[in-house]
Image (cartoon, rainbow, N blue to C red; front, side, top):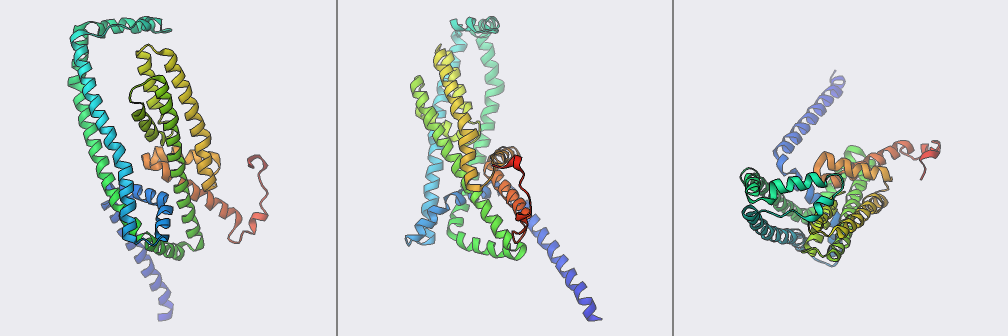
Length: 366
């Protein structure tokens, strides 16, 4: 009788243990929910820069020294541009505030080129003369903007900056421990994955890591190239703060179609200065650079590392961005790489023999 009851008891204990594990994991995720972005960013940064850690470990450095050095380097690389941008933004904010006060007192004359705009020239000129050219109208317009909008935007921006700084601090703190204890954590994760999923689990984990690393390299390198090329274009157009604009373009260039936010705004500034030819040239050049980078260079860089087809790279990038925010740029391709690899393993079978029996779909070969 006891022998017959033993499997049932063993099964009950296994179910109870599984339920307990799921409940504890759920509570842990719920407890750390607000810190998950910081943990995710730390994981992405550690994965992307792990070859540097391996190189330093090969030179005989201790684990704590490696973790401290790499964390400090990344802190400088990430924080220093933010400080420069903050200082420049504060300086420009003062300049803009002075310009608004001047416009409220004296008005802002109507540019001659407004009337030459196709289709909307007369309407824009009339609106400008009514709302900006006369000091009284300009005082009413900007006074309403100052009282209703500027304070609200400033308050929201301050909250967002404080939130992002807290995420950055926790990311760097987590990054230190990942650098220091990473080999042990990977060994333990490999053992757990092998116990639960078998050999395919480790294989899928390696694919996800390679996807994250390839995505970081693709996004960062392409963003830097976009920043350099468009920074040179800003200099050629005679825009002030061309280097700062190039840095901003490089930062936003990591996000697909983020760079146009900068060069289109710069083109509008050139239009206001009556430099229409330079504005058109900047928009055309920037559009070509962004189109080539987002549709060809970036998918090739990411796809060559992850063995993902072109379409799945785009779906991973844009789908991840839509679903998870900025961190989804890196998580999306990693998820897609795991899905595609699971598909390939399902087609091939565990021993790979069934891959010989499945006829290729000629219309999708590449």
